[in-house]
Image 1 (tube, rainbow, N blue to C red):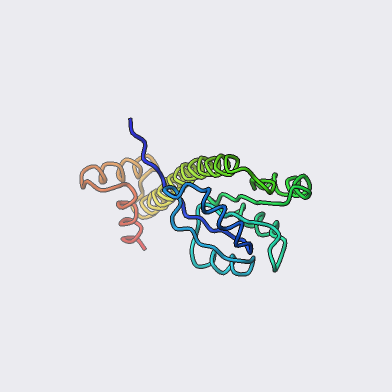
Image 2: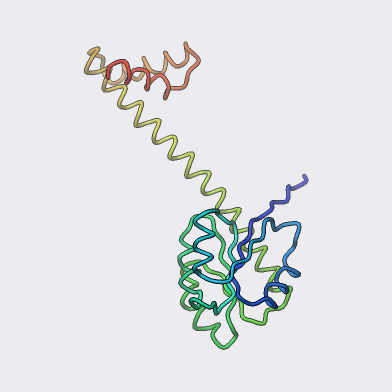
Length: 194
């Protein structure tokens, strides 16, 4: 079975040209598109307000803030993988601050192998989050359908004198006979009885 290779959008938040060149040379280019580079927290927040990214790489320190607050804030965003680069002398302290929020921390200088492995770890995490988002959306849709069908049942009970079981059977049978979803039939009933 051939697996489809996913491509990930990457935002690099870094003020160091040397770091940026090194990271761009290290990341697997066939898996990263687009890659956008901004030089500070303010520019990153502006960019993220306009577009979402799969992975955000933060190279600390930044000119307008250290960068840990940005990393923590972004880790709360659903589906965003955050990789934080910190100097080795700060690594233990910063890792202790951000790990509980799901931020992946790497000490600088980091080997290309460690960077690539960390990137693929974030990719795997991103895919798990995609599946969870899909399941959540599906559950929310199902719950919405149940709420609408229940409202329609109460309309039938109060306007047609049906029991709850009769109202339920009426909605089910009408949906089958008319080749419609239960939700659509329920919406029509709600609209009919206002």
